[in-house]
Image (cartoon, rainbow, N blue to C red):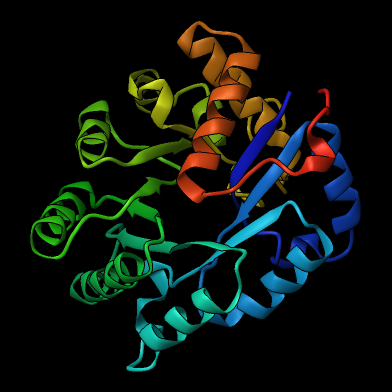
Length: 269
């Protein structure tokens, strides 16, 4: 069985002491590919260095909406140049809108639009962070698609309603679920997880955050735990774990233009 964790942050301090052990754990769990997200471009060298040591890692470059104040006149060119500097870059992100307690919504929208343009120009998918901003984001995407062109992408760590989910599905997006879907009272997220078509479904940990059940007591989440997300999706959707693993792996490969490494071609899990 093969799994792909489509959203990790292994460059965070909590992984510095034991990353080789964490890697062995994800390999033992059947995780054959990982997509490393990027909060801000300054992280890029560290993310590259991690990928140098673990060839199953691809990555993105972008600016998180909660860091929109760090956007300068040079940031767009920096993201564009970094995205073109390494063939392991498979997406722009994470990017998006986070209107939860935000007082910089206009700035976030401006930065989001700028990164949409980069992704469109480079033909790369986007990794989208969206919190309390689904309606605004859908309007921006529709306008961009009509006047500039479409982009592909994934709504990462999705927690929206089925109705909001359908809006992004209508725009061609994939939807990725994290450990939140395993939480006892996450009824809205679980309903959305049942709603997404099989060919648009992805899984992630968003580690080191959001440890899934039954690992909630572990403060640090890790890629090996993506298996628990897959197990919950299998339960919710009434299919086997193997079916979820196969489908989400195929979907991740399609979206990000990646393949399962040969070293894992005959792996069992």
